[in-house]
Structures are given as C-alpha cells and as structure tokens.
Image (cartoon, rainbow, N blue to C red):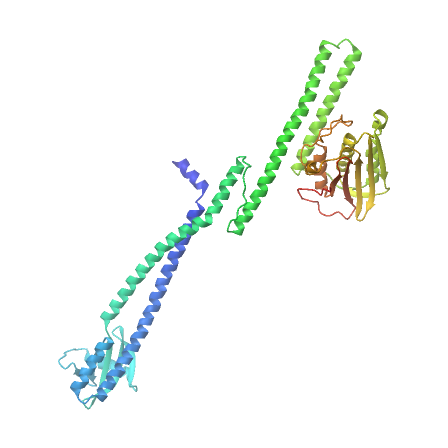
Length: 482
C-alpha cells in the first residue's frame, strides 16, 4: 500500500486534473466575488432607491395635503399615495400629539417628534436614519395647524426583495459553478490531449521505436515546437542507432578476419612450420601484421568514440602547415618504389595556422591514405596547399571512379567504403573519414567533397590564419560540393 502511494507521489498529478481543478476553482472564486460585490452594491442601490421613493412619496403627500379641500379628502389621498409607494406614515404635532391615526396610543411619538425637530431645524424636509432604517421627515400644514410628516419604508417589502435576490444569487452561482466545471473539463482535455499524445510517442521513442512521426498540426505553437524538437531528436537518434549498428557489424567483421588469420597461422606454426625457419618467420610476420591491424582498429574506434562524446582536450598551437603537409606526403614515398604509386605535391611555402597539430596530421594522413586507396589505374594522387583569402586550402585529388551522388551524404557519417573493388594499398580500418569529420568539426574547419563519377574525387579542407579563427563549429553536418 505504501509502495503504491509512493509511486503515485513520484508520478505526480495529471495535468488534465490540475487544469480541471484550477479552472473550476477560478470560476468558483469569480462567482463568489461577483455575488459578494453584487450584494454590497445592490444593498447600496436599494437604499438609494428607497431614499428616492421616500422623498417622492413625501412630496406627493405634502402636495395632496395642500391641494385637498378637506382633511378627510387629504387623508384618503395620503393613504392612496402611501400604498402606491409602499411606505408607512405618521403625522405629529410639535407637542408630540398624533394627528393621524387619531386612535393610536404609541408612546414613542414624543421621541419621534424630538427627532423630527432636530432633523428639520431650519429645513422643510430631510432624510435621516431612525430606528435602524431610513426615514423621511417634512413640515406640513394640516387642518390649519403646522405638523410633522414622517415616512418609513416597508420593512417587509425590503426583506422579501432581499430574500428573493439572495435566492436568485445562490441559484445563479450554483448554475455557474456547474457550467464552469463542465466547461473546464472540456478545456482541460482540449489542452492536455496533444501533450498526452506527444508523451505517449516519446515513451515509444524511449523504447527504441523510431517508426514515429511527431509532426502534427497542433493548435498550440509551443506544442508544435516541442513536437518538432522531438521529431529532430528521433531522426538524429535513429541515424545514430543505424550508424552504431553498422559500425558494430563492420567492426565485428574486421575483428573476426584478423583474429581468424592469427589463429590459423598460429596453428600452422605449431603443426607445420615450427621447424622451418623461413615459413615460421613468414607466418609470424602475418600474425604481427594482423595484430597491428587490430591495434589500429581499436585506436580508431576509441578516437571516434571520444570525438562523438565531445572529449577533446588537445591544445591548439601555431605551426607551419606547409611543412606538415609536405612531411605527411613524404610518408607515402615508399609506395612509389614498392607499388608504383605517385603522390604529387604542390605546396606553397610558409603557410601557418592555429590548431591541434597532432589532430591535423591525423586528418591529412587519413585523407591522403583514402585517396591512395581509391585512385585510378594511373596510381596518381595530387596533394595541394595554397593560400586563399583569410587562410589556406588543402586539397587531395585522386583519379579513381569517383563517388556516386547518392553516396556523397554518407561518406562522412557512416562506416563507409566505396563500392570499388580493388585491394587497398594502405592498411586502414574504414573509420578514417568519420574521424576526419569529427576532428574538423571540433577544430571549426570547413571541409567537403567535389566528386564526379568516372572522374575521381577531391577532398578539401580550409584553414584560417593564426588569430582569425572563429568559434568552433557545432553544426551536425558539413558543406559538401557536387
């Protein structure tokens, strides 16, 4: 039971429920505030209307008294007017005696008379509060004598009015809350539906299902932006997953081949060539070569992993790029003597740049080695370095079959090998161009390919002059020219 409670606490409350409760509570607060304010203002409004009614009734009664030919006629009119306006009246002489009703034995008349004298001192009429309610007083002449007229609003009418108003307010408030509850539920569901959809798709993405499409015409721009970001993440994760699977498959194959050869030749040494020094040396050399190949593969895999993880701690220095290009090209001179390959260099002198020298040497070696692997029957590779505005441009050009247009986008991104089927002259792991891409992106150097099927390829890199380096590029792609 406790574990379920803790699980619910960790999971949190539903956004739909939170919005529903919030909207309903907000509507309830609005209704309550409206009812309170309406009652306050309505009471003030009723009091103001009551004052106006009392004043109008008093003036009408005073006029009826003055225009009536007899006292009985005047009293009849007074009763009619009092009934029309819903007021009760007193007529009192200055000594507290009651003019009307004559049979009344009201003992508080002297007090009422005193209050009227106080309020009407120097005035013909006045509105005042007496006995907790608004009253109207005036001086009139009745039967040839001056007397006081006092009007009071009917308390019963006010009570009935206020009770009706309160009942109407309660009914209206309850109806508003019910409608707000229903409307808020619909609105909350409308708001949270796309969030729920995106969440469910994100869960599927987390389970490794990349056959999703987050793009949808959601009503809210924030949800559309979230969906677009998740779609981009899905696309990148899918590509990364594909690259990882291809990398594992290809690297596993490359590990398997040398390991098989090592085992085979070790067995041959033990069983066949153990006593024959010439054969034993040849078989041993093959084992050494395959071990070197495995070592290079492991180093390249580690380099690629570090670059993709952003672990890059090399220090940038200013160095002579011309000397580096020339020295790297010279490493391939042995191929001219052993296999007839020609690496031509066109290098301008004294070109400097600021970068990680060790990493740039790795880039240049991989690019030239890649060109040697895939150059044409003439076995010719051209290496160029020349100045350009703002820096220098390095190019390595082969005369091979070229790269098909549909493969240009994948040369850097995956464990790529051209479809060309010839023996590689330079031992490699197939990860060289991926490493080149990672290094150049980290260094902020533009790079790309110019290639045409049947006419070879040109891999190029641009370097900045020392002191003119911009911020390192964090783009995921690179410039590719066709």
